[in-house]
Every structure is written in structure tokens, then in C-alpha cells.
Image 1 (cartoon, rainbow, N blue to C red):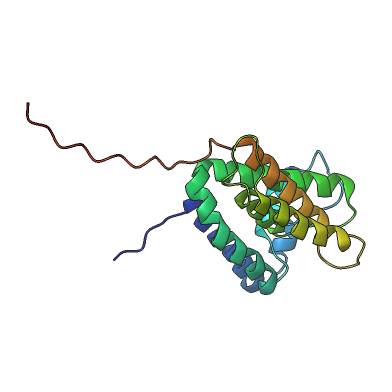
Image 2: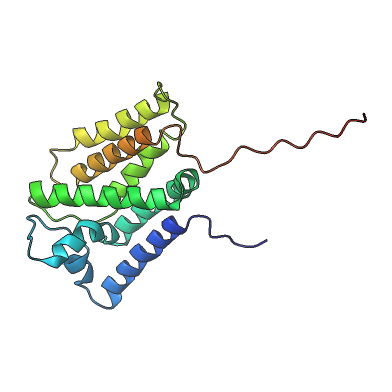
Amino acid sequence: MRISLNAPVVLGFSVVVVAVQVMDIFLNQELARRYFVVHPGFHVADPWDYVRLLSHVFGHTDWQHLLNNLTYILLLGPILEDRYGSLRLLAMMLATALVVGLLNSLFFPTALMGASSIVFMLITLLSLVDMKAGSIPLTHILVVGLFFGTELLTVLETDNISQMAHIAGGVSGAVFGYLLADRGSRRRPAKRPPRPARNA
């Protein structure tokens, strides 16, 4: 029995976030806050501001923050990567990071780091995996009610959690799920075994 690399995008993402955390702790304690945080206010002349619109999903405040996000990503990501393919999942992750980075940079007064938006995108997208045209899975409605209801109830609380990132990530997952309904699977139907030849 051998170990297979079943989800290269998810595994690659996981390696990068762990590497950033290790380097931030042991090599340069300002690394994450310098290059893996999207700051309020976008400076057109600063090339790093463009990079941070995407790179903020790789930085985390501490190991607990990282492990919370990584657990969901490793549980949900491989299923979706198998369903939609590596390139599509990568594009969805990058698009989610970009949307959340822009929203935070342009409209919110606090800095943002972490992959929570990716997690919520995956959760919502997974609830739509088996969606057929003209119908919405009941599980999707329950997921939306559970996660978005919780976020909306806590949106006015003072904490270090960005409800905006969670909601925007979830909305991104819903949009991707609706756009890819009925045409996302890479799996091919199993071939029927050939019928035995009949004697003439």
C-alpha cells in the first residue's frame, strides 16, 4: 500500500500556511504581519498591497488559529478538489481571497489575516455539490441558516474574528456552487462491462 497525493492544491496550500507559521515564529516574528496581512486602505503605488490581497489567507495569528482553519480545509478540500478538479478549486480559492482582501482593504478599518474565508467558501460549496438544475438541496439551506445566522448574530461583538470574511467566503462558495451546478464533476460514469458475444 502506498500513499497517494490525492489533492495537490489542498496539500500545497496546507504546506504553505504551515511554512509561513513556522518561519514567522522561528525566523522572523514580523514576517506574517508584514507580508501576510491585508491592511485597511489600499495604496495603489505599493506593490505589496497587491500581493497581500491574496497572501493574507496564508498568515495566521497563532497555531490555534491555523489548526482550526487547516482542519476544515483538509477535511473538505479533497472532496471538492476531486469533484471540480485542481485548477477550478485553485481558481475559486484565489477568487475568494481576492474578494475578501479587497472588501477588507477598501471598507474596513482593521487588518485581516487567515484562511477563514476559504473555509466558509468550502463549507458552502460542499453543501451544493449535488445540486441539480432547478432545485436547492435542503442541506444547503440548513448550512446557510446555521453558519450565516451565527455570523450575523455576532457581527456587532467586539472580538478578533472577521465576520465579513466568513460571510463573504460563504457567499463566494454559494456563487461557485450555483455556477458549477450539474457540470462540476470530473468523475466519469463507470463503463458497462461488454456483453458476451452471441453465437450466430
